[in-house]
Length: 67
Image (cartoon, rainbow, N blue to C red; front, side, top):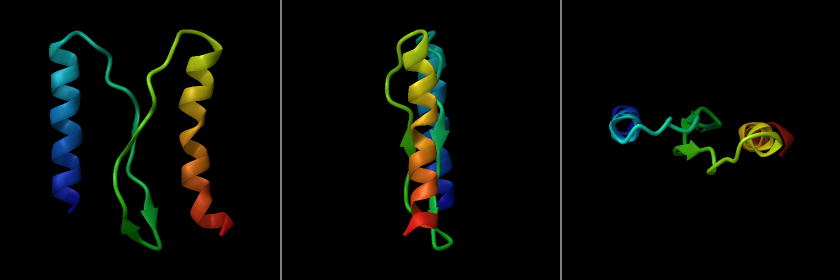
């Protein structure tokens, strides 16, 4: 599973760079020690929206610890 997730991330980043687009940040969250998928940051706008968009995945990372 890990190799598949890494492969998808690499392919996406390579394609983005080929289109002269900055790849969005990526997170691979574990739940109880198991990888559950890939989460990309939503499309961002310059300024405060970018800060909020980059911070939002922290809520996903913290969710397993809160439940």
